[in-house]
Length: 294
Image (spheres, rainbow, N blue to C red):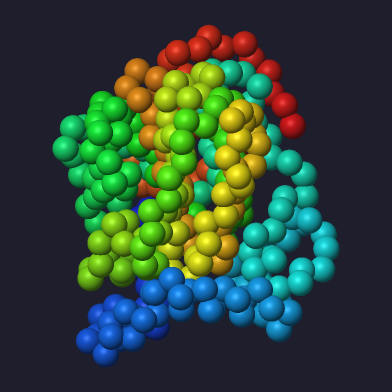
């Protein structure tokens, strides 16, 4: 298991002077209303996809400490081309059907879902019904598990199917785009305003599940590949363009046991850093067979 990160450390590290002005002053919030509009985000996204933006890559790598050797060795055409970079070799997902694997590289928090409960994530409260825009669908996951994967700007921004199965339906929710950094939560209910997409799935080894992708400021697009009737464990599902982002996984009660270290960290407000494909729990519906694949 990788090094754990405390949320309070993330608050101290991520609140830049620019964000403090934008979110904590009246004039800044007036500018912000236009700034977080999807149209403005799209304009910035277009620039970050131009050849000129490639000049920003070396500084980004240097500031974030990204290990470039983990990724494809090639010349990147733009900043966004690098931000959506691919790994040099495919991520490893366990062949053991009972193993729950992380769908992405992120900072993970595990929480139990209760009826009508609200979850405090990055200093804001939200309900599962708010995220899904459906009380009926949310009710199916009462008593289950909510896994929140926070992708920092330096993380690998492609995400995968955690198990094999079939797509029941996919849904998009429009909204404006706010930063996922903690300072935003003082003035905006970020998860209710952000663009998001979710996929209802029937998985082979964990039963019914929902995966939600949440866009943040400057993420003009959540790029999900066209939904297939049938998907497979470790298959790439999509990726985020520039910005910090979040993936949320909902699992029904009695379907999974999350690793004890992750649940204990979450109870103490500590996020656990996980790699894509890393084992994070076990199915309560499927027997273990052992084995891994690359």
